[in-house]
Length: 143
Image 1 (tube, rainbow, N blue to C red):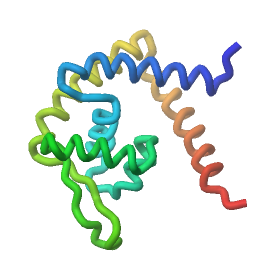
Image 2: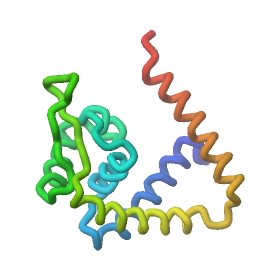
Image 3: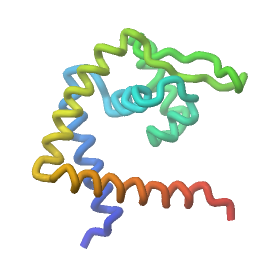
Image 4: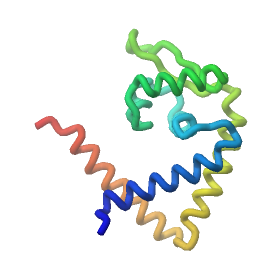
């Protein structure tokens, strides 16, 4: 019998696989579309924050950013309050690609969530956010 953690992990893995397949025609790998998705919601965040959100170590994110930068989709700028840090920004060139990416992701989301009511989705989202908050407290606990 699967634990809740195993079931959620499997769900995320399958959902990402479907997104990967559907985004391949746009030339986007998983690391690239996930990075662009995070930047769409919070453009200009520091590299180390972005790495944590994406779920990779900083060196892996650097390789992803190098690729996105070579396609003129992101740019790194010096961080105003940290001389060693860099912030990552979407470029104007990324706008059209991100719009196409979002259409595909939205379509997949609608198909994955088909048969669930708006209330069920809202409640599931609330539960996931609650669990995420608990996990955040555990990972930031200094004990």
